[in-house]
Image (cartoon, rainbow, N blue to C red; front, side, top):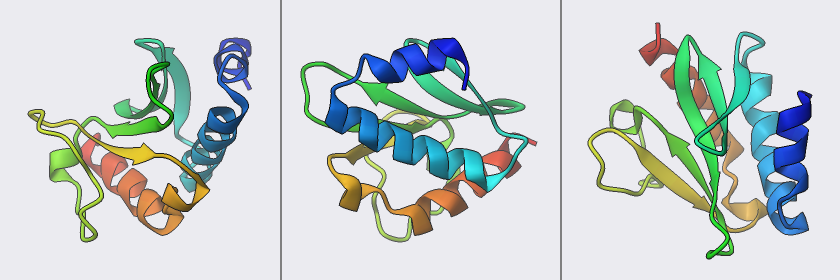
Length: 115
């Protein structure tokens, strides 16, 4: 893990760090071509260009898991929130909010959109 990414995760509250680490693990396990970096102060996942990001705000007790081209992702469970032109997010409040069976397909779709 890159030093800056470790530092970013280390400053999170323990509960949020656990959630961010789980999401990170899922995303990176989808394809070894996915890289990560810090953009806009957030852990961002990249395949050819930005795909997704984990957003932390000190004023709330959850993480936002953003997708940059979310309006083009299939969302059969209606999990994605937001009103932006393309970006949407899922509020991650606990481990049960981490829907791995949905996150993996979203990451694969986001990779295809970035082709």
